Amino acid sequence: MNTLNFLDANVWMALLWTRHLHSEKARLWFDKVGDEQFFFCRFTQITVLRLLTTEKVMGIDTKTMAEAWRLWDQIWADERVAFLPEPQGLEREFQSRSRLSSRSSKIWADAYLAAFALVAGLELVTFDRALKSLGDFVIVL
Figure 1 (cartoon, helix red, strand yellow):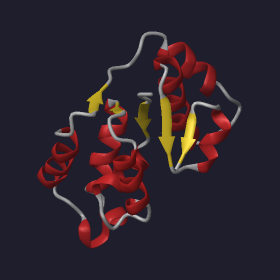
Figure 2 (cartoon, one colour):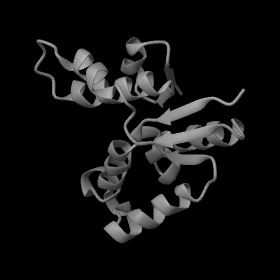
Figure 3 (spheres, helix red, strand yellow):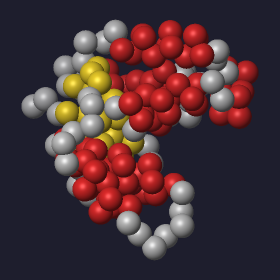
Figure 4 (cartoon, one colour):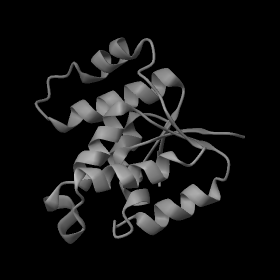
């Protein structure tokens, strides 16, 4: 079965940065699933590029913007990796997941990723255990 995997930025980071806490786990999973497909959207791509160039996150491994693009190009060269534009119907699902009385700024990204995965018929793959509560389409590594 070819699972359509929509990777959270934390999984992309673990695949790209060998000193990431979950790098080994991400790489083992990525290699094990063989010919499955792995998708990113502009939001997850920009998040990863931003994090790779953030000293507070990367420390001594902080990348220049050109270096971050070179890392991204390595993963992008894998024929199993593909970019997905926003699916039709995303706006309605995103709004329904984010029209809350909460003031938490973190919910915006979670609501967007969940809505994207659900509307596109993808499994959202993440290390964030809190996202599991969003539905059965969330896979926590």
